[in-house]
Image (cartoon, rainbow, N blue to C red; front, top):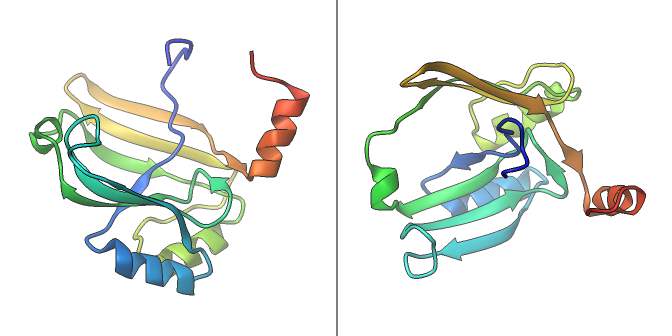
Length: 152
């Protein structure tokens, strides 16, 4: 993180009150959840209890993970310092993303355009926008990138 010149938004989560019901809808939509992780206050770094999962194969910045909060830590349960005012998720296949979001009950519109992920926050110092290129990869794409340009 210290090597970043500015913040980057890489992924986001859609909150659900019932991850089991959400997982069923996602499976029926053809994007079954994977990497389901249960975290409780004894294993989380901040004392929260939740279950989270990735949706579908590969990774696309515009496709959220899903999280069911059971208990948030004291740090997370207070008054937020920042509030979101705009979420920006353009994607070349916006129609497909919007259809999927509709099936999953996610009420965020994806515009047609170059892959991008961004959020505007209202902070104590005014509006702050974090926006960057969206990512779309599978494990094979990621491995191919590492072979072309090894880390380090």
